[in-house]
Every structure is written in C-alpha cells, then in structure tokens.
Amino acid sequence: MKDIKVYGPGCKRCETTEAMVKEAAQKLGVDVSVEKVTDPRAIAMAGVMSTPGISIDGKLVHSGGLPDGKKLEGWLAG
Amino acid sequence: MSLPVSEPQPKSHESLLWNLGVAAVAVLWWLIYKQLSPLAEWLVSLLPVERSSHTGEALAFFFYDVPKVMMLLTGVVFAMGVVRSFFSPEKTRAFLSGKREGAGNVLASCLGVLTPFCSCSAVPLFIGFVSAGIPLGVTFSFLIAAPMVNEVALALLVGLVGWKVALTYLGFGLGVAIVAGWIIGKLRLEGWLQDWVRDIHSGATTVEAIEGDHLTLAERYRLGIEAVREIFAKVWLWIVLGIAAGALIHGYVPENLMAEIMGADAWWSVPAAVVMGIPMYTNAAGVIPIVEALLGKGAALGTVLAFMMSVIALSMPEMLILRQVLTLRLIAVFIGVVASGILAVGYLFNLLF
Image 1 (spheres, rainbow over the protein chains, first blue to last red):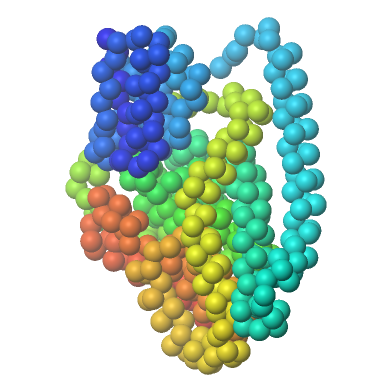
Image 2 (image 1 turned 180 degrees about the vertical axis):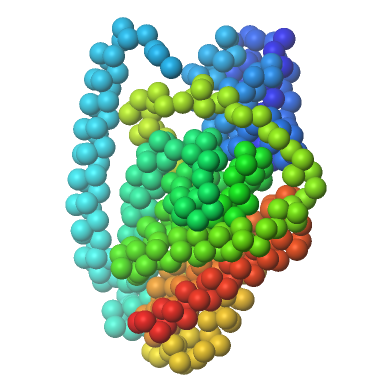
C-alpha cells in the first residue's frame, strides 16, 4: 500500500490533482491511501513551495501545477 | 541528471512538428488580428443602429475589443507559459538565497514576473523563501511583483491602451516592488511574522532533482497551451464584463466629465483612486477595459495607473491568505508601504505627462 499525500490549500487545481491520483491508482490497480494536506504549515514543512504537490511514501515527486498523466502513472507504478 | 541517449530521433521529429505548428498558428493569428477592426465595423453595420449614435459607439467598441483582447491574451499567455517552464519557485529560491538586499530586491522583482506563481501557493512560497534565509524584504519584492506585473495585465494594456503605457506599467510596477521590498527589509520586521513561521525550517526541496530541466520543447509548448486554457477559464467573464462596462463609458459618459473628477489638476484624485482600489477585487482582466475607457474620457494617466495598481496589488483575498503568516501589524506596514509607492507613481505620472 502506497501512502500518498496531496499538498494544497484547497484551490481547484489541488482538487483536480487529488482526483487524478485516485483515478490513476485505480486504473493501475495500485493499492493507495490518499491524504489531502491543506494546512499551510504542513505544506511548507514538506518542502512544497508551489501547490499542488504530491508525495509518495514520504518522497516528494511533484510540485506546482497539474501533474502529467503519464508521469503520474510512472510514479505510482514505480 | 543523465538520461539514456538512445532515443532522440522521434523526439526531435516531434519538436520540429511542434515548431512548425506554432509558427503556422502565429501567422494565422497575425492575419486575423489585422482584420478585427473591419470585422467589428461590419458587425455593427448589420445591426439596426446608427453607427454614430451612443449605442453604435458602444457596440463598435465592444465588438472590436472583445476579440482583440482575447487574441492578445492567448498570444501573450502562451508565450509566457513557455518562458515560465524554464523557471520554478525552487530554482528562484536557490538563486535568491545567497543574494543581499538591494540587488536581491531587484532580482526578486524580476523573477516575480517570470516565475510561475498562483496566489493560492503564496503562503508555502513565502515560508519556503524565508526559511531558506532569503531576507524578508527580498521575499516581499517577489510577492509584490508577482501578482502586480503579470502577463494578463501587460497583454491587456498593450491591446487597449498601447505599448508605451504597458512598458511604463512594467517599469513602475517593478519599481514599486523593488523599493517597497527594500523599505520593508530596512525596517527589520522579521519579529512581526507569526511565531510559527520563524521557527520553521523547511527541508531543502528535492523536487528540483526530479522535475528538473529535462522538459522537451513539446512539453513546454503544452505547458503554454495549458496556461492559456487555465487563464481563460478564470478571466473570460471578467473581460467581457469589463469591456461591456468600458463600452458603456465609451458610448455614454460625456467627454471631459472624467477630466474634472480624475484629471491631473484634482490633487486628491490619486489617493482616492488608491483607497478605492484596495477593497475592489477584480483582476487585471476586469479593470483594464475600464481604464481604457476612463483614459478616453480625459482621466489622467497617473491617476488611472494608481487605481489599477491598487486594485491588482492590494487585494483583500491576498491579504487574508498572507494573514496566516504575517501579523496584522506587518500587513498594515505592507499595505502602507505599497500604497505609498503607488501614490508616488500616480503623482509622478501626472506631473510628467
């Protein structure tokens, strides 16, 4: 099970990102738990400077803008 | 980071296609853009209104400006989207972290224009900067310039008011950001941050190593297209409403009425414009068509620019976002310093032109 966090204060792009992550995980059949992090303090602590950011098992893989669909599947599969 | 070198063949082919495609669209864009004025006149001539009547004037203004602004916006936002793909907040931070105040303020303001930024990530960005040891004043220079001097404002100014005013806005916008940030830095207000911000030490980001520089040209173009889509979803309604308001002013407000209220002789008009602009929240897209119409009716350029800067740079929603990291006292100083800078720009302009 992969522990995924989506960082973002709740703007539209952040919500879209969360949905993309869930969708991609379902498509690949990867077991994930997705947590949305909205607290600015927690976002900053994770080292995210531009939202939305994504971390997988504690490792930051993306920050700023919507993730690319193919890359996202790559991170989830890897 | 080194990538396997075995597959550049299809990639360069794809880049070539993209380059050709972008060039073709650019030519088409230019051809259509040149035809907008006759097109608007033709549209008005189809309608049962007198061209020289108030309604006719307003309609011609509307039919000409809406497509013109939309096209300019598409071009500029796309270009900026591609340019911005070379920048990131992480790179900007790394670049600024060794810089002193002064030069740092200048660099931060310029990077504020070029770095992709959305006000919803203002807080993490602020913390990221401050915790990396970038001086508070330099951080503020970035945060003032980023929303104020944006591609939407510049595109609209070029299209509606002319490139000279657009360049002036760019110059003075950067000027306000540099000076206001420098003053805030000199005031040594680090103690006025919220307590938790001072204690934070965010880890140096690792994203840079992952995302890095290896975007292909095609990916950069795609980012440009993405930027256009996103900006349009956000601002198209504002533009139409703003141009409609501008068209009404253009058609119906008597000549020189604005010259009395917002003319260069009315000394109080500049502060009034700044104060009025703070609670008003619209983005550049909504305010600039109105600006154009006001200018046409004799309002002074300095007063109008001050109004515009105040509306865009000092907005309530952004203050509320920053409230999470700044104390009220610091926000008050921030508003005070930036507002003074805008005032100075307004007066200077009215004096010069």
